Length: 230
Image (cartoon, rainbow, N blue to C red):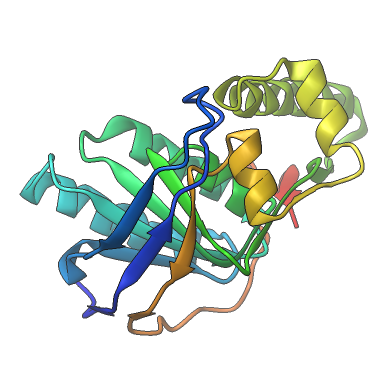
């Protein structure tokens, strides 16, 4: 497990839309266990998500009651890779606390939404939008692949909408032209629970292999269906 050194995280809590209360609660500080911090930085791809998933599972096995802290700083990326992380967070017992460093765009914002609690730095921003995808393959099976992709994305957006307390149609209207959120707006919308005043952390940079677009796996000779959030 990578070595991490965490500084002081001071939180200024704003109202949570989930709580339904206008009361502003405050925490002077949160001390993070350096062995319970994970960082998702750069594109959301298999090679960035896999180490986080593996470490998260290991941390849960060591102590399924202690918090796991996940720092997010990403422009987004693959839905499939991101949803594997979301599935892991929803499957383990340990609570996952998300700390948005400077940006959580696209799939990064979705991942933050599914954390147990989410805190956003006062200078950060979030963005949700529609997925980008393309379909390739023999002419005869293009329609079935398109239909499968549409169904997949509808379920995906429905899950996010439900988590945010919205209907599918409400959420789709929000993201149609990109839904950008300041920290204050994120808290009011129920995307985040609090605003972070200070966030200091250190971690080992991972060596990233060459970038490859990841999609659905079909026959080896087939091109994949691309589903991406850029």
